[in-house]
Image (cartoon, rainbow, N blue to C red; front, side, top):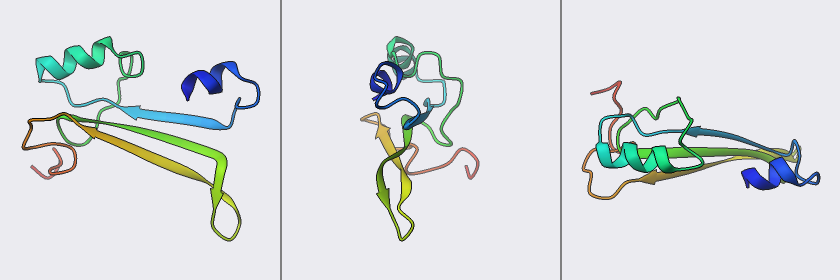
Length: 93
């Protein structure tokens, strides 16, 4: 989706992205994110551990009485972790 927004004039300005890395500290997750073209240069972090988030705001799909654009949230929790972004926040720990 990022490539479409960057390279196809039909999508230019119609997709905005915000992504959050997992909090640092797990060597396997850190290495995986450092190798990712989506997450390698990201300096924003999730509120919880062991997961990542991606948000896409778009007007390609609309909803509501005024036909407003939507924001899609995609969350991924790395397997094998009892504490993750969906179970506990670092701020409430």
